[in-house]
Image 1 (cartoon, helix red, strand yellow):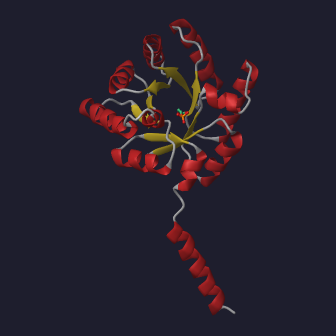
Image 2 (cartoon, rainbow, N blue to C red; image 1 turned 45 degrees about the horizontal axis):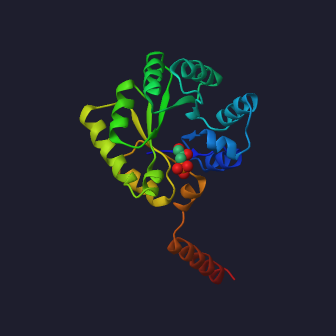
Length: 218
Ligand code: G3P
């Protein structure tokens, strides 16, 4: 399973990249606003900065909602750097735009997926990635991880090439569940990725090894 980091924070992206396990980055307008990246020029510069840190796909979301606007904006974004993947919302206009991008060899990430039906449409339109939002479904007492499993079964039934990018991942168990199911990619915050490394028995075991070394080498 590929690991993407879901942030526009350059320090966190660098930290995850330095671990050597980072495969890509996802952003969205909310994450850009959280870093106070506002205005067209600043946003474009920020995408380029991210692309220079990470050697992998970087999702950049369109903020237009009509087909023509999405095509123009998405094409501009894709021209910024070869790492850019155009993130398009799951709407009828978005589906048409994904079809256009697919036919023009521009990679897409279909976002705001909350049902298997939406995932089928995104795959049929030729999306490179589909982003079901696990955490936001859990937030409303629905089964986010269950949706990942359902989409996995459907895509496998028909050999759809669209990759399942589990998004809105919030904690380490989401990551492990996605890996068990066979999500192609997960995108989550740095905190959830780092939490995977920790176990109390690792900490106490290491402390004992070091203490025993000290005792034997006095
Ligand atoms: O990739 C989508 C993600 O940014 C949404 O996460 O935590 O805002 O639901 P969250």
